[in-house]
Length: 116
Length: 109
Image (cartoon, rainbow over all chains, first blue to last red; front, side, top):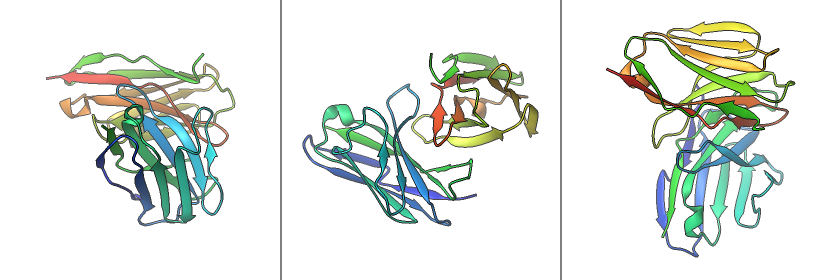
């Protein structure tokens, strides 16, 4: 199966600082990557969809200036949480899809962000 | 109405019994349906996908889809303690996967 690697798996940062999370497709080229956020005991909520070489499409209610997404290559997308606050503490998960028509996407391991 | 609805549980099933998980969805045009298993603190793991009406079996797992009723279910036969997890139903719309809130399943030894 396809492998998606997410880094770091856990990060603790101080309020007001920025944190970058990486999502890499290790054995395939991902035309599309998705970023989700999951709060405790809740489901995954899609934050944004990123296509290689173009601007990310953000879901309603997600601040694009706060959650910066870069998909500069077919194997790497990054999510930067800028000026993080305690309410941004969550489990962030990426997934990657090979082709636009593919129905299946592969998930990274997730990143537990704690803002103190 | 939520796009994808699941009973959040918890659902408690004795070891060896059949666990039945249910999901309904609102977008009648949906074509792809998935069941994911998520252990606490981990990311979701795909266990079944189904695209056409009827049953699809894979080992101890059977997914059932009824597009007319907008209903998809997952049966787990011979439940094991290792099946204890949250099960997420996901439905693909035009571009994105929409997840249900998940059902927490506990298998009791």
